[in-house]
Amino acid sequence: MNLYQDLDTVRSALSLGASNTDEDADILRIVEAVSREADGFCGIGGRSAVGMDGFGFFPRTESRLIELSRTSRWRELRAPKLLGLTSLKVDGAGDDTYTTSLTELTDFVLEPRSGLPKSAVRFLADSGQAFYQGSGSSLGVAEITAEWGEYSELISGGTTAEALDSSELGIDLTGGHLVTAGRTILIGTEQIYVASVSTNTATVERGVNGTTAAAHLTGATVSIYRYPRPVEDAVLMQSLRLLARRSTSFASVTVNPDLGQVEIFKGLDEDVKDMLRRYIDPVADFA
Image 1 (tube, rainbow, N blue to C red):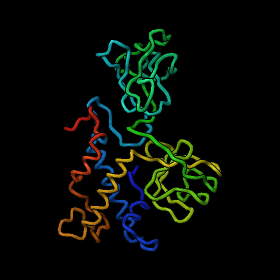
Image 2 (cartoon, rainbow, N blue to C red):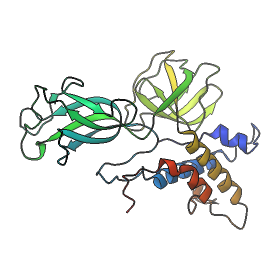
Image 3 (cartoon, one colour):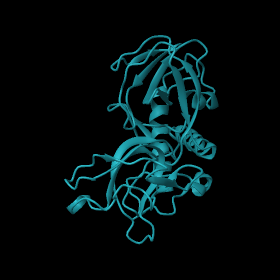
């Protein structure tokens, strides 16, 4: 759950006063819709040509079973969009369970050596681990638990002003925090979506993007996810236009008063697409 713009930025661009909050829910729905449309246009929100489920410009934590690249002269796994490795396991016992943990730099290296995201795991020739052990479906397969995605950037957002258990949905923050509605924040290893903010209290959705809700101490560091600036700018531009078009004969977004929802637009404007073209995934499957 990640929006590529936050509520305060859109409100500021619309010159909405602090007391004028009637549009807030509609703004967030439109920004979410435009964010997912941007993912789709870049080919990173669906399924890639190498059979991997795609993500947006943010990290998601999950485990994946990945097969050996049969065309490579190296013992190599294709692992596109790998941002941060937690563990890599193989079926060392040949019992179709992935319990043998391998060690980075001893058993394998991540490629490319510098920069993110990574795209492959290359097993070292002198590793003592037998990657080819296993039987049936586990032969030449590794289980990789990691953060996956196109992009990961964090900025400082403040600290918690209270201890949190794993179920609390109202987080008290220290004064001067930078947390705003529509942002996804990170506390420890838990990603948290911020639905609204009232002064120093954020109403949130816990454990998003494959992470697990956990307890946190008072004074825990709160970080805020940011995205490529052209993506943020493109989402802001399109969102503002859609909000403006609702009251014109050219409207492609309407508010349904009975259902209380926004009926989503027809697509991105051409100049908005131009801002996003540099991020199109060259291996995405657009079919």
